[in-house]
Length: 330
Ligand SMILES: Cc1cc2nc3c(=O)[nH]c(=O)nc-3n(C[C@H](O)[C@H](O)[C@H](O)COP(=O)(O)OP(=O)(O)OC[C@H]3O[C@@H](n4cnc5c(N)ncnc54)[C@H](O)[C@@H]3O)c2cc1C
Ligand code: SF4
Image 1 (cartoon, rainbow, N blue to C red):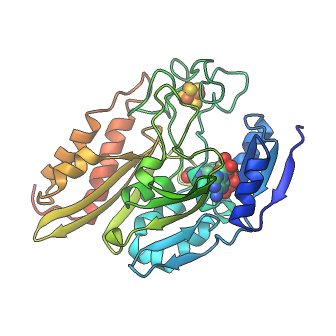
Image 2 (cartoon, protein in one colour):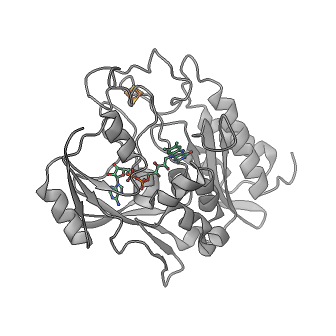
Image 3 (cartoon, helix red, strand yellow):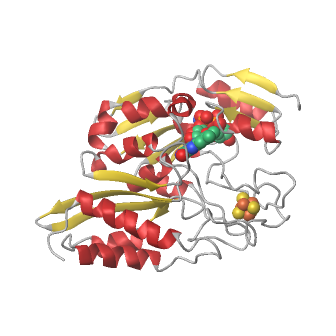
């Protein structure tokens, strides 16, 4: 048992000040990932700054039709929120596809975004892992990697990001709002997580000490047809083997706007820009969907044991696109 301090922050300023005052501090949301990692010895913070009492637990309609979701809104509450269910259904579906009811009741929006990879080598202190301990090697590269990345991985790390919610946020053009020692800023959700490159220890673009204060769902994707689909080893309580979130807007029989993101294929939610570009201006035919998805997945570089993910992701994407805009002809 490693001793650590516990601070319950009453305001955002108090939270960021407490962070600055304790080197090695971590913010504490629902604790469903962080506390597990502390028990495993993967995380050993000197202090926990509990952010769950901050006034960041509201879902707020903004005057321009956007929706601001506070960082401490619980995953269950967000999934059930009428505005989310009606106007950004892919987000509600993604949340409900994650974890279990009990976990979703505890997990927060900020914590969900910052949950760490489920790579078993990362969670096992006896194994080499560049993400946990830079320079020690990647145990998964030539080890057990059926669940690992097929896109954007590096020799340093082949882990995937486990969040379902983050995949929907990336497809829906959401933004992540942050507050830190240098003030407030916001980052597109699709750019919030990183590819591993030579620094797999960094999961996201967050700066030291920054607090996630919320997420904004934009008016531009409100009310458009959107959906999330996830393939996993069992029907609930399992992380994705592959998933897809998509939003489509048709006008005059052609695709005017497309947002597509894959989950469990890469170190971050994989925004499928090539597929989107191929679809915009095209009629929603099976051939157009296949062409777009194949163009995106042509970049895949499967490992020894995970080539199955490419056809799986392809089928999921074609199914979701077909549901959002039933193809006119083949
Ligand atoms: C058995 C099991 C199955 C699961 N299955 C799934 C699944 O299928 N899909 C899925 O998506 N997830 C799944 N999860 C993961 C779950 O969704 C996450 O554990 C949860 O979302 C994390 O949220 P939290 O609030 O508990 O975060 P915490 O554990 O409190 O924190 C996680 C990280 O975020 C940081 N943090 C928290 N809040 C903030 C903030 N506001 N600003 C800055 N940093 C912050 C913490 O310091 C920590 O580093 C599963 C978890 C378990 C245990
Ligand atoms: S894939 Fe990444 S997280 Fe897993 S062992 Fe390799 S470096 Fe560590």
